[in-house]
Length: 163
Length: 224
Image 1 (tube, chains in turn orange, yellow):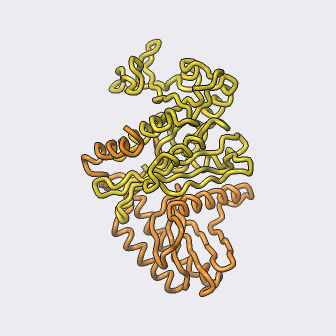
Image 2 (cartoon, one colour):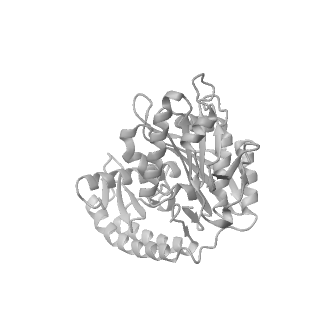
């Protein structure tokens, strides 16, 4: 492999994930569920709208998770499969999915950590299957961008960063 | 390329600014942040120490707009320059689409530059990435300082080139950014390729956008 492996996320993938996360939110009474990829990009958000900047949130989540991954290795653990950050009103629970993406659950007093943890387990198994299938199909069937994209992108780069 | 999100019609590209401590990586991002129209950029995040040294990373998302139905975004990251933060340096490279190496031109910083470059190659290979096969650009920063080393010297130490063994690629390729220079050339019978380079003074912004334009265009090419 020469560079970072590529993958694409399609509308039918989104629908599958949306339905898993929708069910999870219903069962756990959590507020919002997000999928962030390990490189720091937001993949999907389901549930109540959030007030924060999603791009910044995703980059910090990935960094947080990666840093903790390294801490786990220092302790001789292969990974910390999940992390919990407790706030006064809002808390977040993060869980690894298929070693490629992170499930982030935001919840408040309407539920408990125990219930969230319990429901996350089965959601992670179902999401893991969806993402594993998604990564396995990469390569042959990636549609790529339309022709003409490159020229237009270069023009936009010149415009934005000065010709 | 990391991810094309067909559901949200988004393409995100990750660019990482790498290099020795106090070389000007954060200054590059700050200049971009201050010059790009506020509507085209997100919030800049700096995880820095109390003395403004980058502890984990700086992050700046820049929005290129909608192209052929896709929202294209560049996520600009810096890594900490100090060696003892290597663990976090390495983490930031995960999923990188393009690398800018910001070298400090001062003669006294030559060893630090070389060390950071070796460290970059090592960290990339530990992720399974090959720096010679992904978009890579070098920026020689602080060109305004009186103790700046000549570019030829910096090129010889930091950008000596890597061998090209594929016969189809063994032909001279002109450097589009420097007249009468070559990116692919023959030396002592061996074909070699060098990374494009730019001279810069990041504090005043000189060369900052030239570098960013070059690396982002090369990254976009990998999407096609």
